Image: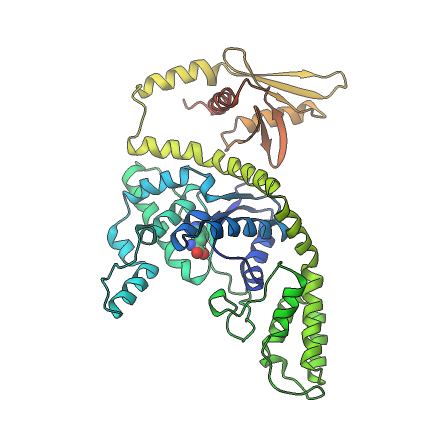
Length: 451
Ligand code: TRP
């Protein structure tokens, strides 16, 4: 298997994405995820949102809107792993393991925390007034997000660079203390896209919710139009030449136009196009670019159950990496079963890893299939049909290669996926518990035996 670059980023779920978020973060991330060398992990940082917001309705609304925005924008959930942080119980568990090695002095230096302290001191308050442990520990939770999946690259805004550096620091310390020569955690790098547009808002300052100068993204065509009509321009009358290079209306246009469209708009402005007409052009452009996505967005928002399903599948994909990795980390710090290691190793080896076996057979239509039988003969998997024996063989090989298993459960059964394709299904079990036990057995059976 080729090693792809693992790209991971989180989106804090407070607020509704606006045009600036779309051009600055969402669109480039979706484009990057299409690169065949990228293995992208994108998630809703809803635990982080709790640090900043104690309004449950707003948290809930924002998670839904952000999920729908990314999907409507064209994120392909078969290609990427898209999930909610709060669906991955391994994240808070890892946060604790990291908290126990993170130096307090390191966290004292975090910009966000320091800024709050400085403000308190300035106003004569107690230095820690109104500061929660959530805010203080924010970088440790973020380190867990990143280290859990061994991300290589972490696309973030400049204000987050320090947090990625802290993740390295904390990860390194854990490696050093518990790795015994093994590097558990990959050292992540912050990825700052210099070329990516920071869009100006209605008043020309950076588009930001805190300046109240945003253009809405998918709410409705009318709202977008209304916002555009409020873009501040100079007072040149229709017929007078405009200066495109000093017009943030032009900058906004450019961020969504082809080179040719931008050139044409530029020359029209130079020739004295009125600002009212210029605003119409901008609206037309944005509506063309975003109208279809807007429709998809509203369809998604109206079907929250579908969004829920997609995110559950994403969570399963993420957990197929997180669960075995966290198990390893727990072992490393000494949170181990009381049953002696050698015993466990011996029995799993005999009972499962050794004895589980693939049995291939041919269907009447001459396609090839296989079953995976557990030690006791119980059927764990029945494969889909493959055109030839070679493909079937490759699939069984890949399943045993030790790469993270993509297991997706549905009701009382589960299926196994490779590279976005379902390759095998389980039988239907009596209940969820029986299903989960079978998934565990499957995982052990497919773990390469270490001699
Ligand atoms: N703190 C990030 C922000 O506010 C969001 C975030 C949470 C994140 N966890 C992350 C970003 C992990 C990258 C990686 O923008």
